Image 1 (tube, rainbow, N blue to C red):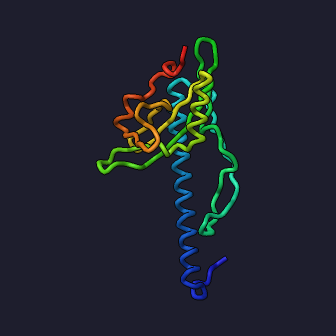
Image 2: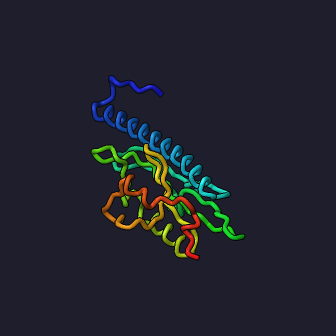
Length: 180
């Protein structure tokens, strides 16, 4: 349906422009998320994970405060990827939360804020660890992919983790995540 711009008020035109801009941002974020998840799947496979599956989130349509149409998750899911790590004859559950972020410091260093993971995501990762399963954060940035444990020292609420600082906590062998 074509819009007759000559009959639309300036407020209506601005709402339409804002709605389309938001729709384009949403599409771009979804595309980045899908690319990040593909990189995360490859990284987890290289670490020896098997049976990797993306955890799909169902969405419903809703409206934001400005009246723009948005997609709202139906439920808070346990993570982004589930898999199995085979060790000493046993399959150990792996739960991964994937974060694709372009945020960087003034010097161009990628950073990941503690708040980039929502409270329920932290809770699910830590609960998974409580049962001696493997829980990881897969951070995808312009510098590459890094797999981290959820308990990086000094990284807590209100703090950001710099890419170069995260390197010392990089998981290079999932066996290191096992408690026994």
